[in-house]
Image 1: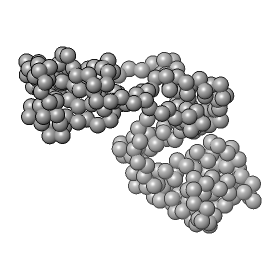
Image 2: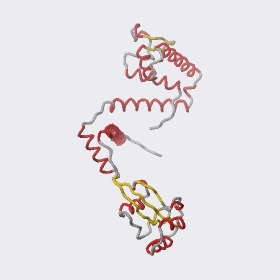
Image 3: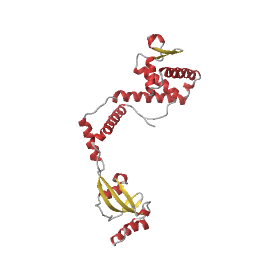
Image 4: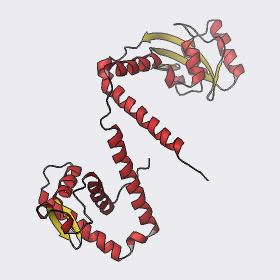
Length: 271
């Protein structure tokens, strides 16, 4: 969904529209006779601003320090400016019509998501099952390794041969490696395999502590000779510490599933 910044005028007008839809007793474009007199906060020409409108607009500001009077003044000013903009035909400009249509779509989409998913909840069993799946798919080990990066396979094979004959890995890395870790003896520190490009990650996961590559490992960076210095197990986060994260993940899954269903039922053509 697009995230264009809303201009103040359009935001206020669209909020009034939202108040309308959420509270049928409040209609900011209706004549005053449609709303009980004791529920009218103000009228601006033919437009009514109800007390419910003021309340909802104040809640949207999220600032309890702002008074109802200040909110009402802002809404009146916004309505007056809206009417002046219409008199000047600003609302008919292509870019303005596009922004208003986009903001209306975004507002309605957000309200729809709130309506459908705002009260969604999951059982402990559902949350625990999702937690177990996430843990089983996450990295369980960290690796500490060094590498020597060469431009060609022949150069890498020559380095492997030198290491077999007793050459020092750190010194060779300083002398021969083209990678940024070369001056540090090829030291990559501790890392999870997923941080590395796939061929490098797969090679490391198959190695034991102290192993050196028996064949060069090719990636888009060149040819690597790897030495695995150490391996350690990662401490997995507890279910309780991840409960809210898992809950939000399941809500996102539900939203994505719903969007996919809506798209599948629609006729969409891209040019």
